[in-house]
Image 1 (cartoon, chains in turn red, yellow, blue):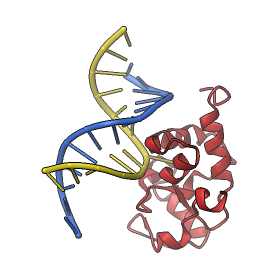
Image 2 (cartoon, rainbow, N blue to C red; image 1 turned 90 degrees about the horizontal axis):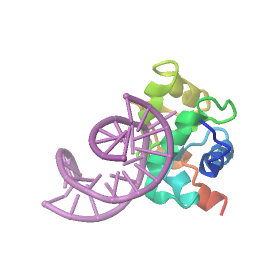
Image 3 (tube, rainbow, N blue to C red; image 1 turned 180 degrees about the vertical axis):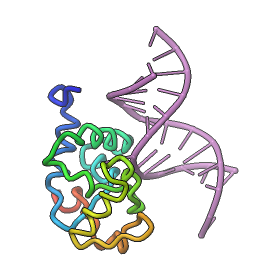
Amino acid sequence: MNPENTNFFQKVYVVVREIPYGRVTSYGAIAKYLGMARSARMVGWAMNSAHNMEDVPAHRVVNRKGLLTGKHHFDGTNLMQQLLENEGIIIVDNQIVEFEKFFWDPWKELQ
DNA sequence: AGGTTGACGTATT
DNA sequence: CAATACGCCAACC
């Protein structure tokens, strides 16, 4: 995989790195910010590549519902939840409690 | 070269 | 209001 050829992936990494501590965002929000709101799935694939990127906190990115859909992709079964809880985010049944409260919208924040 | 999958989201029934 | 269908676009088989 050559992220260097795909600016889209680079942009995703940049946005994810901009997520403040104790905050989370959604794939759609990032996709929208990048102008690819129609393909939130690509953000997920970008995260998959970001798996090698240590600077990209993929655990802070969840789906629109605040559900940790990709936690299974992490090393540990509940590693993603552990990381989020470590940042003060409460998670119950793989879902972020008061997701809207912790939600960080790049379109709104960085605009 | 073609078909399927997927860390999603929105629309429709 | 819940469940299902479909569209997106890249990667994988």
